[in-house]
Length: 156
Image (tube, rainbow, N blue to C red; front, side, top):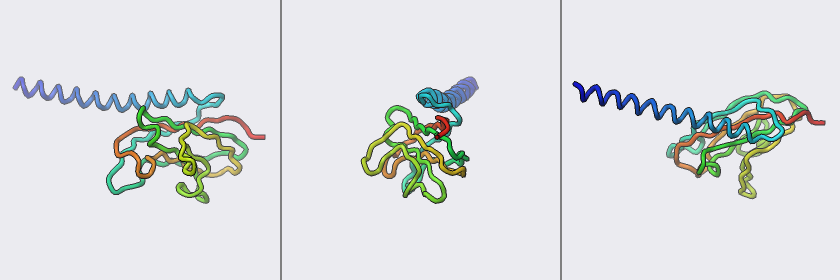
């Protein structure tokens, strides 16, 4: 009976540690990403757990935001060490789909270069979509990533 009790206590302890580690990953990434935006005001964060499943190209999550005309925004992306070059943040709307002509992206397909952030000057108040995903055919692991939306200023 004592052994069963000890095993049960150890199992509960191990499960609680794994949950805390995941939560810390997100909070640390949010703080790290939000403090990197120079001369910009933090507005919102987008947390995601990424998990590539075999046979599925589209992984990650997407969110909806309303952006205002005449405002400059900054979108930043942070991922844990070793995953930065596997993850991409994309800004798009219904007229400019995610995979063809997005408004902004942290990965340039033509030059095959990554960037940590990009600025977007909104020309039309509308609903926009933000996605955080593994790049196509890259990454077959689990990861977490954080996107940050920041206010830079009013455009002239």
